[in-house]
Image 1 (tube, rainbow, N blue to C red):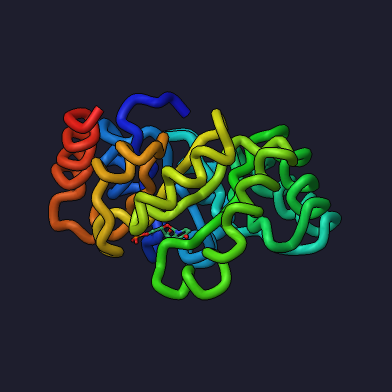
Image 2: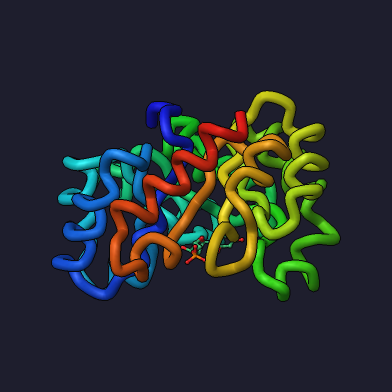
Length: 213
Ligand code: 3DU
């Protein structure tokens, strides 16, 4: 994933056709595509293969199982062309290490989640989850664009690991605030794929980011 536009498209659409249409429209303004359960269940796992021919794919299955099963899940994603995966940290050091190893380091660990409920259980342990990501050798963490001050806090813990941040647009966060707080990439779904003009929506975000750095 080349750090050019600093946007990861969250492709939570309901069909292969929609997926290819939105990726095609937004292609010039995004650096990668995040594919998760909604699209994998709607279009089948080979959608990972197809999208990975167009853009780097981050597989977001928020993996949260025992180490042996985590390894099996990550292997399936990587086999289909994923460049990276997203896993949960609350399952513990051994489970995270299994993902990191199977993904050859290309794993992001979820810390504090961006939705209101993210404050309930994930926020109180987010600093520990970030430290775990660092010690386990992950590529980076997922941190909330809805609370840019938390991006800045977590940045201090992980040092040079990457931060990818959801919550821009539909969840209320602002791209420029998240980038200024220390995020490397914003993750954006509905603000792009629900737009009547996904190309312009993605370009507007990329322009906002460019002007903020
Ligand atoms: O709100 P959006 O439509 O821009 O989508 C956000 C995406 O980021 C979506 O795919 C969701 O699964 C993911 N995500 C969060 O929203 C919040 C998190 O804490 C972690 C991932």
